[in-house]
Amino acid sequence: MPFKEIGQILKIFFPKTKHYKTGKGFFKHVFVIYSDKRKLVLKIGRNRKHIRKDYTTYLSLPQNIRTRYFAKIYWRHGLFLLQKFGGDVNVPDKELKRLKDIGKKYRLRDIRKDNIMKIDGKFKIVDAERK
Image (tube, rainbow, N blue to C red; front, side):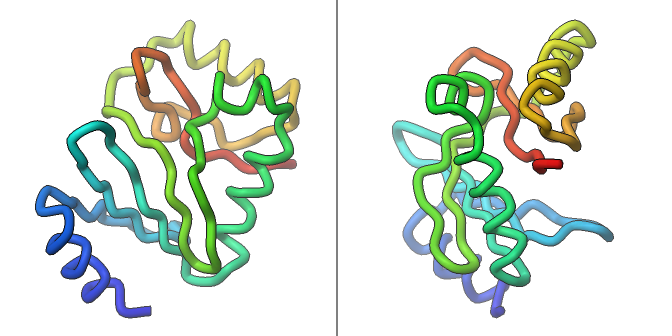
């Protein structure tokens, strides 16, 4: 997958696009896309399995819970996933515990401060996996 070239193309259409550096253990490349009205993230997986896991986790949540506690996913296709994105903020311990309890109820794991962002004034999970 030509990640560098994809980043260059995104910068043509969305000049403020930023590429999040990923370290060991990460299976996706993340490009934050800024538009006038919203902040989105384009996740590109090394293979379809990594993107499919995120999407099936999102769909496995009840519809009324899905966008209340989880960042909305607009679409998925093959190696790509477009999701609503928020700002990096310090997540209070009380909020982290609340989201972990919700995650436990719906059998989600990997809910930690790095995977929570403030979107539209509310703390939401941007990445989690189903047990």
